[in-house]
Length: 384
Ligand SMILES: [Ca+2]
Image 1 (spheres, rainbow, N blue to C red):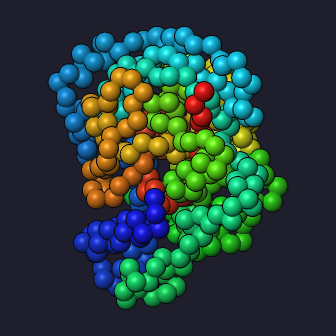
Image 2 (cartoon, helix red, strand yellow):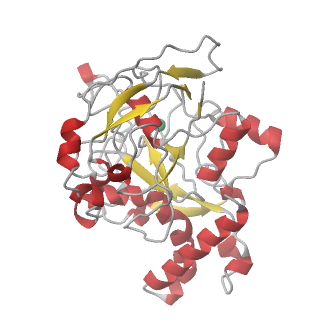
């Protein structure tokens, strides 16, 4: 997306913020939240509201039950890996047909089981790391969305300090809070970017093998293009995450901790005030810290959310073609009408069944393409 379109998207969000803002005196802070943060985190709020607040076309479609019954319970990988050597750090995902969707009543936008048939593709075994992203920046001089100030021409009357580069950072409260307002545990932090994921006093020294975060959809797509790859479609991502298993609750099976073994980087403790780090990490973990799935892919559940190439709509599955779907032509989120969003998948270290259980392979997330956060990253795919 061009800089101009990015500014237009932010300006549109500002207009919505004006309408919704309860207090003119709070406008500047609300402006930035509306433009950046809420778009990035509405998916977590959606986890608690989707079943009631957004009855989607896919929920209501009379053909849903029929499609669910028809959806194949079996994944059928049927193509061998190409003869050419695997690109470094990638694994071959064989072509096949799988059942895409989920049964969770809290995930109304993902509940219509339907068959999807995909060509084979290469996929990064891990989320893109800080070291890999640093090589891209060194080679190209690329500046990420979080490092760019807003254009004051698009925000007349807004103080310059409110236009400074900034990005959202998870900032947990000290006291229990209601779980219906994600803004309570997110702060828009000036100076937060991929090299300073938690703000200007943080850095990534010693975190070279951690997933890069604070990258927008545009940043992720730019990296993939530079690397001769692309972002996965949502269908490719889910098919790969399922690892050859059919209709399982988790990417490794139906038991969250088989034999007591921790399988993914998620949240333990009372969200968002208590983080017990029972899985070994308070926040993100080095890529590949937990077992790979059936296709040899790491962190397809948890650690950091991953951008996909599709626009987000809650009714995507009701209109999706069976063969190699690439998503709808436009975006619509009933929770934030007017803000175009791209799909994110896999959940993050903040996900918990108390609030956002979207580390399930069928779970869908979404975010403002112009914004990152310190729990959003990506990985790339490549055709044969
Ligand atoms: Ca992940």
